[in-house]
Image (cartoon, rainbow, N blue to C red; front, side, top):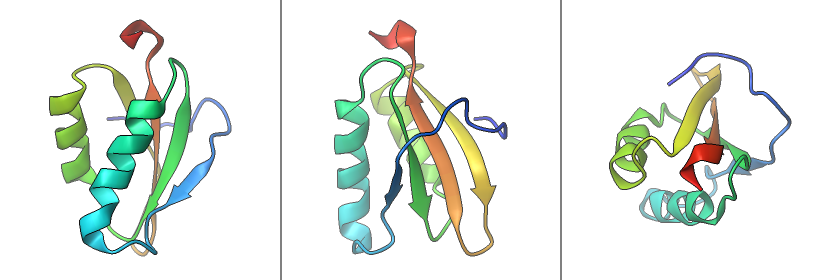
Length: 86
């Protein structure tokens, strides 16, 4: 996990309108669809750190996780598929 500024502009995916039970499924779909170097910025209403651990278990060392905004009302995290994960 990193606290740096994202390396390029990535589309924002705001999961706040989804009911909590749908959020992780949607995020996993998005991560699975990323091409190497591809990214999106996850927008959430709480720190999605538990999601980081789930993604790392499913896709070990295949993505980067960069906090862009750390609350307290909104969290933005850039999730990028690493080129070496191809």
